[in-house]
Image (cartoon, rainbow, N blue to C red; front, side, top):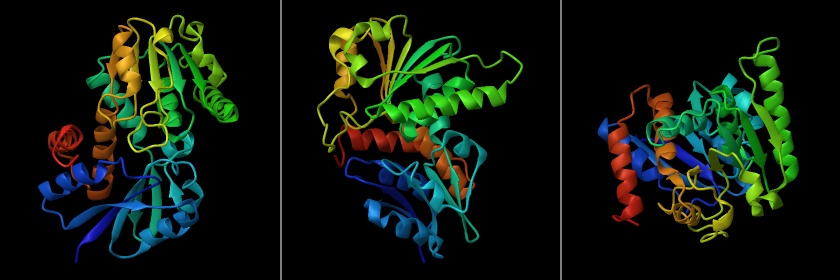
Length: 296
């Protein structure tokens, strides 16, 4: 009898995770099916609780439930708890345990694909949801000089800043190992080029520009505000080249799309579910095939 791993989110029409995760499962000959479980907010508790059924192995969690899912779990590992967001659920016996592999996926892609060392750099983060939380947390760990965070809901940005400041104080109460300057700013300030003065890295963590979303075809930034030479890292992976990345190219910026992060976080999730090393090359190849042709 096959077992199942689900992708819990809403909407899921844009997602390619079922394709590359299934390719990885098939590589090992595992009788496991990875499925997209479109879930409305009202259905979330039942969907998560359904993971306890014998045939289920676990799940990925995506927009907009990475924070909402925490109280529905039996246990959350230390990293996910500190970040305040879960994107991977593993069933251990009858207990549901939450993990965050977004942080790993983000920094792995930044290192290997972006060839960017964040230590001592100045970073602007667009979006303070689940992905923004993971990104901000790992950048503080990697000792960025400054982190300026914004969100369409300003209170989310300020709450994330407060969380990061608490973490920095806990991690280095008397030392200067972690000395990132963390601030929040209003979303409206994205229209000013001054916001990006001395900026080395811009990370976009919202769904603006995502295929099949209500803001498909849009960019959070205009051409005029993107500095030449900055690295623009858009976590949106579908389409391959987002409206933001197209503008960044025109502005003379360096670009990094969201596909590598998606695959690296998926590979880390795969190992949590199966105990096996993920076949990353196979996952990458399938993901690229789906995005650039093949079934889409």
